[in-house]
Amino acid sequence: MTASSASHYDVIIIGAGAAGLMCAATAGYRGRRVLVIDHANKPGKKILMSGGGRCNFTNLNSTPANFLSDNPHYCISALKRYTPQDFLELVDRHGIEHEEKAPGQLFCRDSAKDILNMLLTECDWAGAEIRLKTSVTGVSEIGADGYRLATNSGTLTCEALVIATGGLSIPTMGATGFGYEIARQFGLEVLPTRAGLVPLTLQPELKTQLAPLSGISCPVDAECNRQHFREPMLVTHRGLSGPAMLQISSYWTPGDDIRINLLPARKIEDDLMSLRKQKPRTTVAQYLAEFLPKRFAGAFNDLHGWTGPLQEYKNADIESVANTLGHWTIKPAGTEGYRTAEVTLGGVDTRQLSSKTMAVLERPNLYFIGEVVDVTGHLGGHNFQWAWASGVAAGNVV
Image (cartoon, helix red, strand yellow):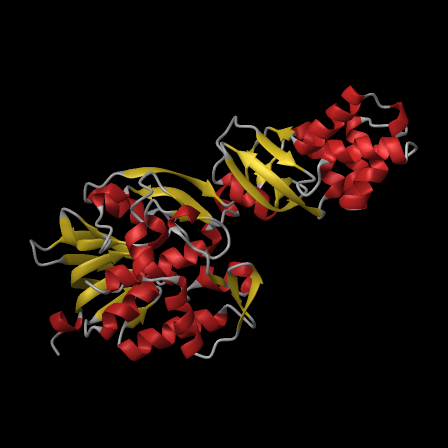
C-alpha cells in the first residue's frame, strides 16, 4: 500500500463518541474503509460518565415529542428508522445486562463500559479504524472528490467526511466548538447555542435561605413556557437541580419565571379545608411534613411565616397557602452553564441537512450527526437514542 493510499479513506468520522462510533460500525459493515479520529486520549468519555456511570442508553418511549429543535420535524425520519427497540436488540446480542430504572429508561446493570465496549467491538468487527490523540488543524475540499484533513499526525484524505464532535457541554471531557467552526467554514448557519439539561442557580437571598437544605430531594411539578415536568427536584448549595429542574432548564431563558408545585399529588386547598374542619389544631408545618422531607417542610414553612393552627386561618388565608405551595414562583439567576450541562441546545441548523442521510444538502459528501446539530433530547436516554439513530442514518449512506 502506498503512503497516499494508506492515508486515504472512504469515510473519515471526526469524533469518537456515541454518534461517531455508531456511524463507523454501520458504514464499516457496508464495506467502507472507515477511520474515526478524536483529539481525546480515550473514546466515548461522555458515554462512560453518563447515567451515574451506568449509561441511560435509550428510552423505550422515545418519540419526536421528546426533542427540542428549531426545525422539529427534522428528527422524525431517523428516529423512525432506528428505534429504541433496534438498539436494545444490539445490546441484547452482546449479552449486556440492563434494567429499567424509571418507565422507559434503560440503564446498564453493571457499567457504562459495557456500552462503550460493545460499540468498540462493533467497530472492530466492521473493520473501522479508531485513531485517538489526533487533532484536526484544518479541513479543505479536494474538488468534488472529497476532503483533505491536516492533523497533528499527518495529512488524511477521504471521500465522505462526518462531523460527530458533539456540543459544548462538559468541557473537562474535551468538548469544543470544532464542529460549529467546520459548519461555518462550509457556509452553514449555526443556531445560537446554550447549556441544556443543566442545574439552575438562584438569586442570593433565596439561595441563602435554601442553602441549609442542600441534598434534599422532593417530587414536584415544574412549569415554564407551557412545558411541565413532574419529577424530583434537588436542592443544591448553588440552587436547584434534579430531573425536574434539568428538564425545565432546556425551556427556560434568562428572566423567565419557573412555577413549582411542591405537592403535585395533592389537592392542597381541599386538604387544608378538611384538616381545619376535622383537626383544627393542625399546623401548616405538620401538614407539609406528611408529604415533604421534614427539613424541607419546616424550612419552607418558616420561609413563609405560617404559624398557628389551621383554626385561625380564614378561607382566604388557606387559599393563599395553597396557591404558594402549588405555584411557588422563582426567577432563577441563571444556570451552572456548560461546565455541568448534559447537552448543548442549538447547533447546526438542520434545514441545511437531509433528514434521511444527515448530509449537507449542497455538499452530499459532508455529514453532521449527534449533538452538534440542532436536535436536543429530554433527560432519560433520548439524547443517546438520537446519537444512535443519526449515526445509523449517515452510516447507511456514506
